[in-house]
Amino acid sequence: MPSKPAKYGIKIWVACDAQSSYAWKMQVYTGKTTSGGPEKNQGMRVVLDVTDGLGGHNVTCDNFLISYELSKQLLKRKITMVGTVRKNKPELPPELLATRGREALSSKFAFTPTPTLVSYIPKRKNVDLLSTLHEMAEKRDREDRKPAIILYYNHNKGSVDNLDKVTGTYSCRRMTARWPLVIFHNIIDVSSYNAFVTWNKINPTWMSDKQNKRRVLLEQLGKALGTTESVCSAQPPSPSW
Image (cartoon, rainbow, N blue to C red; front, side):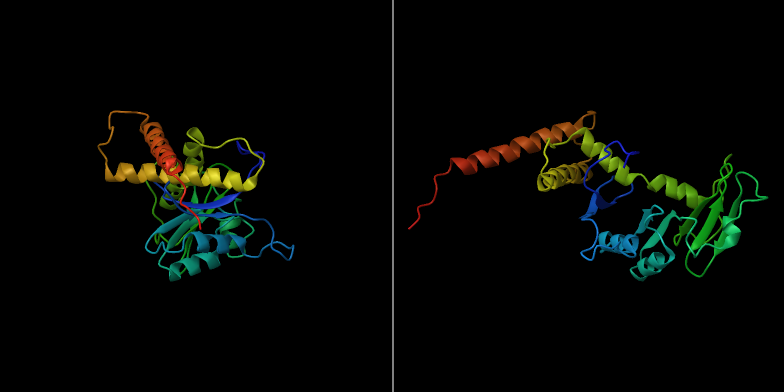
């Protein structure tokens, strides 16, 4: 992916907490199916897999994953959804796609019994979003006149990117051409970050005056794991008969 900082690598689908970037569930993308053809409804299958067990929450995702059918399946699990929609989706009404005659910073809404659709024009091109969380055409008193659906999406969309950022700042990765080792390093990085989030939640006053708390926790965690390994290796082997 040329637009990403890491242009080459292994693709992993991740569901994260929107506020802390705590990784709830991860799934490695293994390529095309055994039949050799593209997987149908891949986005819906991925979201249903990584949100299993998240009843009562809202899911924010981009236009590669979102669809009207997915929104219905998630509602059966008591999960709402907010996300951008590609303009070639058949569920989008033509009135939302048309931009001729519409002024900048204007919005159009479409309502159904379950999802709400909005088309917002920041300048020239419109942005379309679908939400099963919002039921009204709520607008905030802002200069850009963005509706509440877009503000909610912008506030919650960056958790996975932030997880990539924080695990890249302090990482145990090493240069290797072995993909199982790459995945193992990633598991360690994400698990240690999850441990940091959990520890801070349980002990909110721990090192409250320090800026590098995560580095300190990783250092202590590494020493503890190394000590355990050295103790285990120092024990004499059990006799065999």
